[in-house]
Length: 285
Length: 321
Image 1 (cartoon, rainbow over the protein chains, first blue to last red):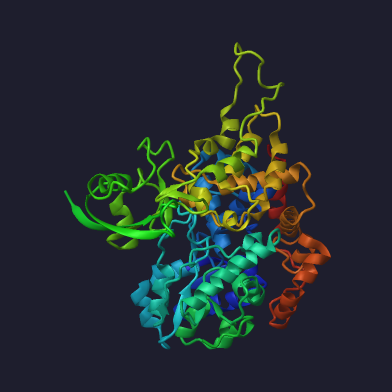
Image 2 (cartoon, rainbow over the protein chains, first blue to last red):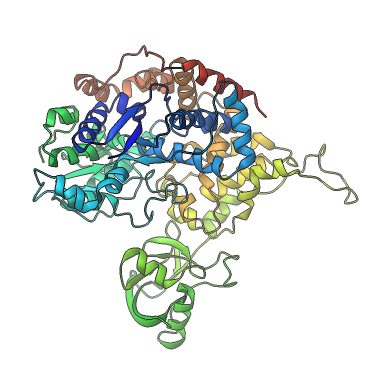
């Protein structure tokens, strides 16, 4: 199994602690070695680009440079971190002048970006390492009769030029994982719609309405729960669920699981190790 | 040559006589390489002369033939039928008019709303008299490193694909729109422009902070423009010209501060730093639930390892041109 530089991101280190716990538990069970580099900083979630593009690029080239020192590809569990890190890599690898300028900045700290490591999402790695069939073989507690809404959100698929793991218009990675676990993926009309998280502060009503519409679609599709690869989508869908549903004049409870939580259940890992008790909407699916 | 039998489900609507839109199905034998536009033309020529769609240059340059193909906006002239069938693993293509605009007929939408919105946002160069010569005898030079800042945004062909798929446009009447805001940025960094960064105030007035960064605009653009990148940089310019006391700008500075302090985002202080006491009160119920579930870190955060390299890098980056 592979060895990776683990980049949990701020959410998994803080408000989405259960994502960190479940990722570590699943990786351990499957023999994937995650090495968390203590030098990794926050990626700036894209908002650093609004301070100044050079700051955004330099901060993330620094993160990539530390992974390069270890010779390890980065694995993250946050979709926005994934996009921000991959975008930095994409821009620097395709523009020698820009790479030189950023390296001049990094040299102030004795670092260099070369472009030798890749950045992947944890659920991509599950499929790369095992495939749908291989993952199915690892399942000890199939999630039979469970209908799961595969909620991608935005930053694992768009823009395809930067992400590129699967077609942004018809991704299937979550469906494959859900099927491998013995559950049934429902066809969600809003599986690729935005949850509004990144406009939460300037436009909370709009953000909550988008999340409300997504939750409503999950309900209508007959799903017993939602799974998502993004802790930020998760925060809107789970922690802010009752507020979001108010925006669409609804009230129900829809459990929302991080992908590693869902995988962990099927692998027979005990719920406490997956941090399921930390989800705001109780998980009883 | 490889051929396939394809079912085209086309959304039809003539507001003058139809009560509501409906789908009509057409079967067509499609050879490999045929574009959606060629298929539409063949259906019109051989099966249904009443079918209405827009097309002009057939070379992905005029931007008139954008339609939704299986739910995603595409230039019909640039999109091959087989590629779309393969992507969705189907023999059916659903063709619909673009979203976020009124339908004039069938696949033709009314561009008035997005274009009027753009007109309201000064989408033209206001010559800077110190830079642009008064007569044509002298050239107005733009150097490659200056052009690089806005070059890609000049590739926009006004096909409205991004506008039709924009999340913020769907929900916010006042939102400027992706290609429109990207155009504001395009002039804001043009060295010949007199208004320059002040243009970001136009973006501010048109709710640029409400962009949800869903990246749909970047994904659907047939000319590989990434409007969202322009919008984010325009936000940055607005902070530079002093529009700092709003949740968007304060949120940005909260991140910046967190990185300098510890290297990681201080989530606990984020509501206060972004929206003040109001931010704390609005999010108190959720905050309490999260604390009870053990999801909150201490407001005082330990710095990451080698934090000093992060500080050096951030300071050096702030100083470069």
